[in-house]
Length: 202
Image (tube, rainbow, N blue to C red; front, top):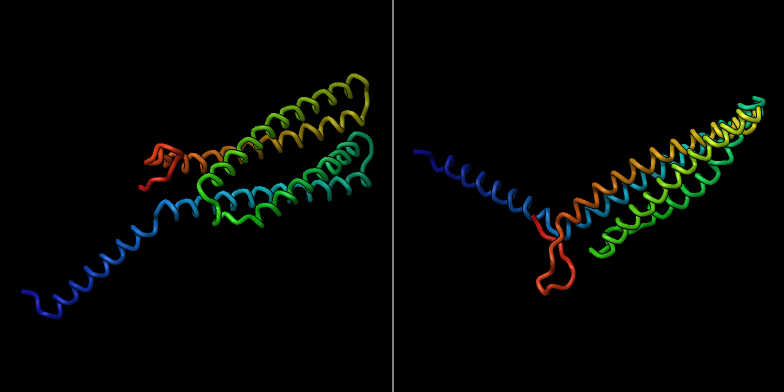
């Protein structure tokens, strides 16, 4: 038969386990899930804009240096890289500022869904534009070869590189946002009054 001290230890252990399980159950609610989801979405897009910003700075730096250090086709390639990434720098700067100043903890369900859907639509549009950039780069390269134009060949190669990077960037970012948004929409059910949607847990 266990002693009184052993009995008290067992009771204390069971009490701790009960409190722990209750705390864990209380940790995840529809409201806390929504806050966590929104924070993850903002962090994801902050990281993405930081990557794009780094790519832009790298290309502007190397492009400017390459412009002065090379000639002909290679010089045109570096020129186009630098010029193209001035636009990327602006997009990444504004995008990062928007993500850093966002307040995802205040978003309700409707705002959370709208933000996720808007990001997916923008990224899908960008993917289409990226394919166009690559196609135009191929056209410039072909024209450069046909006309024996070093400048057109350099610009074409630059567009192929930049368009290819952006296509990969936007496609991966769309996939990550889509997966995150699917985790949210999978928990939506009609509200009891039949108007609108609500989150359920688990």
